[in-house]
Amino acid sequence: MDNGRYNDFLSFYLKRILESAGLYSSEAKMCKEQSKKLLLLYLASRKREQYIRLEKENEKLRGAAQQSSEKNLFIFKEIQYGDIALSQMDALEMKSSLCERAQREFTLFIELASLEEESATKRLLIKLSKLSKESINDVTTGFALFITPVKKYLQTPGVHGEVSPVATQNDGMGIFS
Image (cartoon, rainbow, N blue to C red; front, top):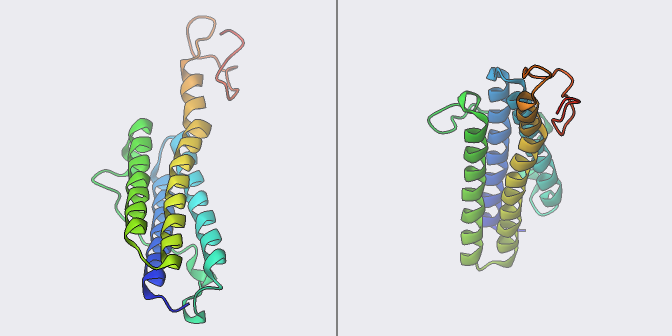
């Protein structure tokens, strides 16, 4: 395929995926709350999976000079995510911020696809919008897996109103609830 715009969009998104994975990993290292750390590590792994899937799907379409290098997969550039570090946000701020970012990407790629005339590039932009939508789902799923059970556990009263150490199930319900 000899389509510079296709390759530019693909390279941009692949770089964005790696930057996001790197950010989530580095923020997880700084995070003091275990549940937020697990959420960020989960999101980093999901981004790495997206990268690998997108590379595999497009490797045949691009020239050998642009094929991915395995050694670059886990080398990340430090990037800033807004004015405040993710590790410093409370869980709801983090969820909102991550979802807003993915929603902006989704909207961008949908708008670009509607303007694109070349069919292969248009399909790529639609695929990138779907990956952005997948990122929103990853945040929501990760929040449900790692943040919500912890909040329910902390809110489950014990016998004398204290937090019950028995309330460790994912549904947050202890035997005294």
